[in-house]
Amino acid sequence: MTEETQETKETETGDSQRQDRRQQAVDMGSATIRTTQGAIYTLTIVGEIEGHQVLPPSSKSTKYEHVIPLLAAVEESEDIDGLLLLLNTVGGDIEAGLAISELIAGMKKPTVSLVLGGGHSIGVPLAVSAQTSFIAPTAAMTIHPVRLSGTVIGVSQTFTYFTRIQERILDFITRNSNVKRDDFTRLMLQTGELAADVGSVLYGEQAVSLGLIDRTGSLSDALDCLHEKIAAQRKPS
Image (tube, rainbow, N blue to C red; front, side, top):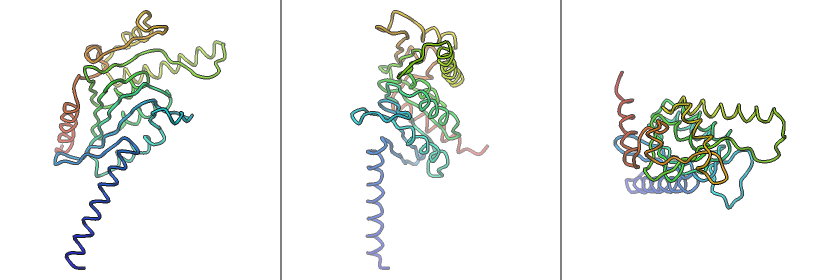
């Protein structure tokens, strides 16, 4: 093979890889950042978390059947050093949101989350699932009781079912953050703050002062934290 042919092949490979990365960003809202400090996989959780029912095409959504195998691949990949989770979500399906949250919480690779815009409803467990969580000063998080769409049978078993779902969410949030269970429950059941609803809205500093989120910060703060975690993991024990 001539030197010119080799250079042509390398150029074509480079172009193909760049095209794949651009297509990845379009299809999944994700990208891999590679620097001398390590390779970071950036995953966005946006719109509504889609569960077992497909949302209308006009709705922006995060599909759990895409995210779950992707997270498993990130954890096992030798080419990825850490995960950056960017959230701007209204919430969505509880089962799907908790499934994604549990996967992130169980990862050994360094993980950092950043709430931008909003991390509402089931977005709260997703935000606290990372090893370190950040929130932008202007971002908001809505905390409210569990809701169920569709037909609801008005019997005591339904109320028990709601309570058990609520306990699962509470257990996960208190296990993966520093918020006190009583404080979170009080905010969740608070009346008078949301119009025609029960619950509370927290903004950047409030979420941190309650212990729900670790720090306020921007993208650079979240990346710096993740780079520090990657460097610490690389050090020999």
